[in-house]
Image: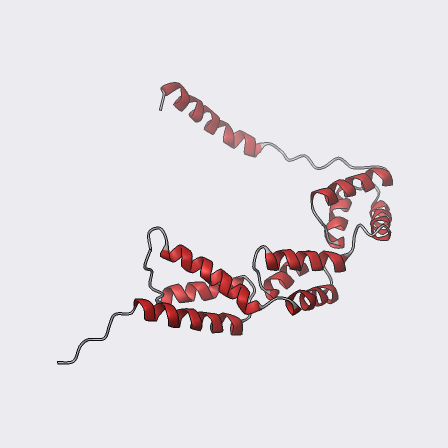
Length: 202
């Protein structure tokens, strides 16, 4: 590495503590409902929000607390905020794209302030069309593909690896019944494939 470049890296690294020490400026307070409404639209353009998330965002920006309630009411009337729709979209995305189970999705939606009635309705709708065991199987297949590729082309599913997979699937929100059923299926096929042959009798 050239000496000049090395010195530049050292100089930039020395600035990091100064950058961390800089105070974080709070967002500018907005004095009118229209300004607050525009800020809400910008936030919704970036991503969907639950009512709770939007309320917290607006409370940080509103100069007058009552403006938050008025803007929230307007957003709801215009169908720009709807917790039932938000829960359905969130559940569908996290099921199809992230392959997460109902318990993880429910926990994440509650953390976003979505009422239980909307969470339960969304999960009932999504998992009526979704095979939970198929999702578990897809995650297992991806993990096994990784174990068998690269540095572990013939990885054996020992108890430690099975326990690690079990914990990972629990964190992803799947039921213990679905996890155990798919792990049993995978372990039977995989361990038998790589098991040592029985010793020959004399």
